[in-house]
Image (cartoon, rainbow, N blue to C red; front, side):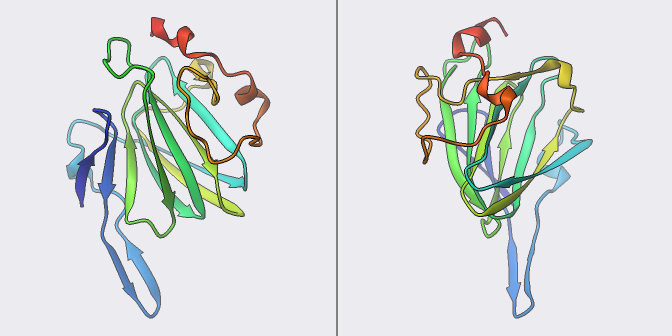
Length: 174
């Protein structure tokens, strides 16, 4: 496994090894020695239908670093920089990840994260550095024009919470 930088400092592509044979494949998804200063005590798994957009979420207290791995299907994954004094505040990294991808995506603390399910169904595993605390969860608007994310569809399926996402200006205080 190796870590590859993205266009914004912080998020990383975690290049993994896949071993294929006639039975299928074996994929390494995590090695603790790559993240010596970060512990990942909590995992979440989500299942979504095509066109479901989850996010963009951030936990404002006990912020979470995440490692995103797709175990079924394909997603358009996004991380938006909300670090208070960052030179790339409001900028984003996006990539397509599938069950066949030879990488996972590391999203550091201070980034909002979300994804759009591109396949009939997708299952996503999040490895988190902090436990989920719903009272501190905030949602950044998925279609904020100041961020201008180039989503592959215009009318995603959203939860009520995600429909009420806050604009980028709100997060300047964090």
